Image (cartoon, rainbow, N blue to C red; front, side, top):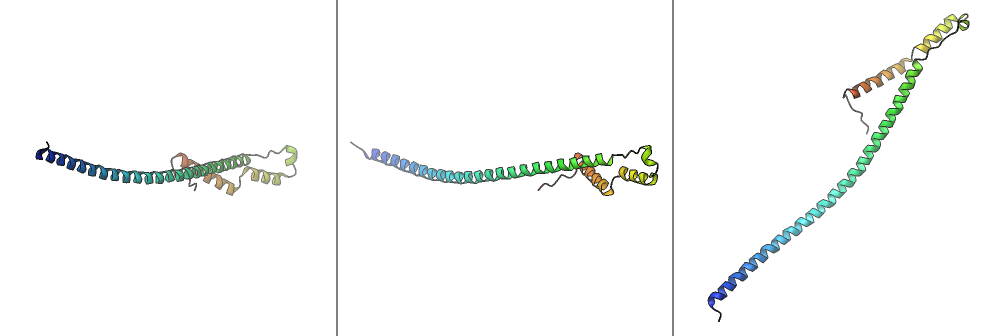
Length: 140
């Protein structure tokens, strides 16, 4: 036969089970909320990655464009140096009658244009600053 003591023990066990079930339900609810937050965070992170990839491609394109422009400037400077170093050589037959004119032409050929010289000097100074860790180029 069932005694009163057995019924009380059974009631205590049922209360413990009900209490544990309640704890598990609240833990389940909090875990579901955390999963929801993590999924939302995952979506935001994926969006940031996509934006980063697009920005990275744009940065890369800008750098390549700047490098291309620097190559063009370097080529122009190299051509300018070659042109400024050209010397007009006269033969004795050419210089007999036109000595003053020939000397002036030779002087013009040997002296680079002032604007070209100042541009070249500026470019050289910029290159020196960059090599020495000076100001960087703003490519954007």
